[in-house]
Figure 1: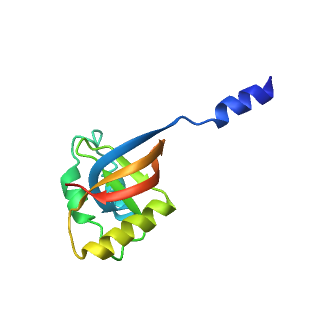
Figure 2: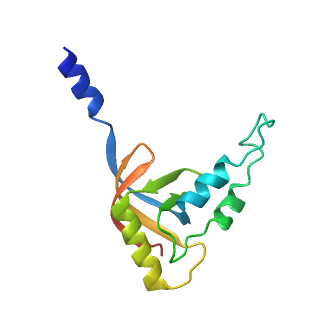
Figure 3: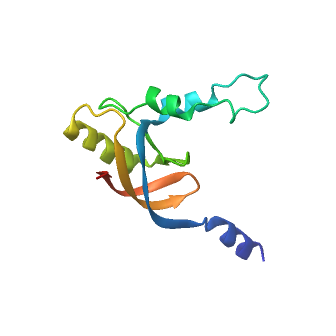
Length: 120
């Protein structure tokens, strides 16, 4: 019985998807999202997510990336995705606010990346 329970819990739900959004510096973006006043009760109401995104545009020096969809959902890239996104930025040169399409497997808020391409 325990084996079956452990097996079911170990199989985390994941699915293939294409995510469209802005490429941002993961460390900067997480820090900006956590930067809230402890006395504020409604932290999501007072957030300017657009400003957080603009402050955290990815550059060729960025090592860890996150994709932020227009809806506000964000997904971190795995190590292979970070390498692919970094290579894309080095090829494209300076491109603030780059929109990309990322394909891969989504599990929780992490994407196991197959490809990263600039959005058309």
